Image (cartoon, rainbow, N blue to C red; front, top):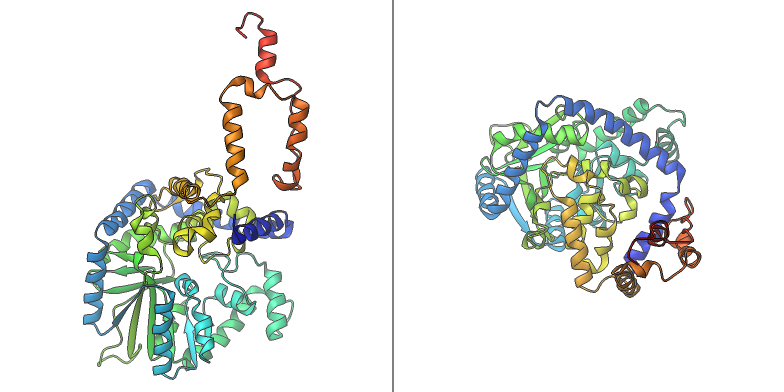
Length: 462
């Protein structure tokens, strides 16, 4: 296990026994679970909806290039410029060029994990351009100097008290401020940013091939404000976000809302098809769409991992995962955490440094159960584990231990050679290095099951 894996292990051990953190996450996810249960109750047959959505996304993977070129053709006709970025460096170069050409000193950004992936805020600030997050949760973590904790709920790890204290320290708002009062404060701050920014940046929940559209879903109206005032609109989207037809949004919008927040429909669903026309008053004068690969074609090239590109980023697998709920989002040290992050990150950032994430799962299957497009996440995690072993990225002692266990377990007598007392003694290190301080390894019986069985059944062949 490399340094990244060791860092993960240490961070996981530290946070797993942080009771305050666990209570905050359990409270926030319990509210999510209640909302989602109500959201699912609205469906007559949610499994049928998930099967249909999964079939559409798999059709996309079979005809990926065709749909992406169709999207490019249609949105270009409406005046947008499409820029293809193979990696973070190319995407960053495009953004730097646009910022310089427009002499931008302020940009506003709606919630987008793709921009987190390429560290857009850092790029802008390096050029002397202030980058302001406009989603409330993203705004909170930006003020705190942190990254999003969760792909849907960026500030899930913070309580009301944490946020009130943060705002008191940064903005001198009253320490006893209510969530409503803090939200109103942020609203007033952002109004000034929207109206003076030169560039507005969004991600894309869906790229719509047949109309050349960018679909953005959000609950606060900040996405609309981000694109209403600035003269330039930049869209940064992963190339897996494509869907064939606009009419399919009638299926995907409710699925995304129900699995993401429990809503029947996200409050704001906007489709952008280009910059404003000559006869229009509002909207940006220029629109750029950066289509980001950044390792996605490597995922596509792997037949076992390919279906993970069907993900619609609802966050349901994170909220269902017992590992995520124990170690939290920051432990993964990646843009995408939880089960989907554990599947994708080794491809996006290299197996050498991130193969350990494929082992950060109990394989309980809850993530597969809740996935709205039926991605076989546990199967892919197992395949990634096999690839890790094949690339000789696991510790040498692990192989030796498995070989030893294989030899011992291949015959029943292997369990009887060592006494129960010696087994108990040999297992003691697990209390410190394996189980953690919250539990102890059980003591082994003096005699094994087979020894006791033979003793009680004298006629059994020894």
